[in-house]
Length: 313
Length: 129
Image (cartoon, rainbow over all chains, first blue to last red; front, top):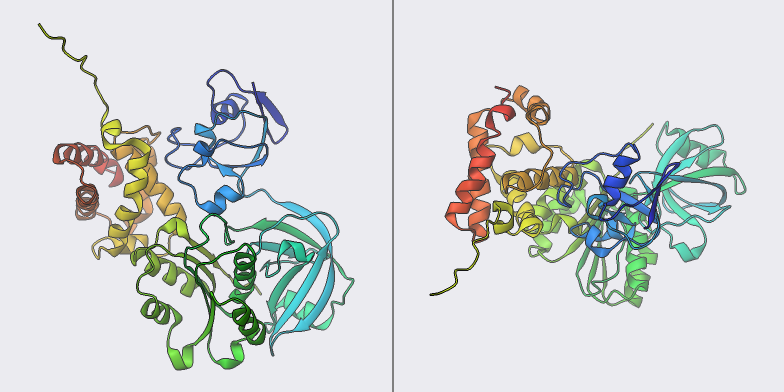
């Protein structure tokens, strides 16, 4: 029978025993409720080994892609190593380059010193040598060989001020993660995508848009960057060039001062989003509001991927 | 003489369609809850993905499916809402929306009544009485 490993424990499945029951029997600290694949409280991540598709039924595509599954209805054919859904890995990394994208946004590229698997649009925690840590979304593609972050310089922002004034290429940092389910998943190439974000919420969307296009997405990809005024926009030339090269990419800006709130703009512009997939990033109030409104407009909650950026000093 | 088919006793959960029925109902039900002015304020600011999972656990139980809910869980899970003024009228609204959801999905009225009765059985725990 297959063996399930979790933390330091290994237990061999008994006849007809689910992964959850084996973990409970071995005394592992797991939470659960229905034990029937319905409530989702026992969800875990398969780190190695394949899980049967049936144990992922009803989960978000991006969760499936990360190996999330329901151990209570999982009867694997092979050995599994499982982890809690929020377990992280940590790697040493080196700052590669720092360049301005606008008056107050920096493009920072970081090269990991050991293998680090991620999906464009996920986020990681950047840890400075003294331990100061901040989370940033990934704008780059895995095959580019670096992690790209768009970092807004905040007055009194301890990490952003350090990067703007002191940090130099070659500086060592640590990268923790990745986290988040805001990333492109293959399997529905014609589905219209709505990518909406404010401020540096553009970073994950820039990664997701390019990932989608390079993965052969043929459905329309609507990328809307929100800012208070024109000065808040950045990467316009790259995005216009990308849109020129990919007719299904539609890039536009939504400015609070001239167009009004971005959630209103989006709902007016795209009234029929029932079968769409959305990625929403940036200001927490806007992300929450858009998520709720798109859901009420008929979008499946599993098709809404949201990443609210919480400010830290 | 004819042979009668062996009568099988099918559970409410099976009659409703089990896990697939929960999946079919959850977004529809949650949308109604969020859009209902009587109760939407209790759902302000909550993580929608976590809330969806809770709704699934609740629907699974109300559909007569497997669950691990205890009266104590119900009390603890709703204690903060009592402070916001949760009362019988809100429980009524939830049970009404649950019925509407099932009607939308074409579920027969007698099954809807059974689901409503299970939901009803949690009322006193939800309201900590």
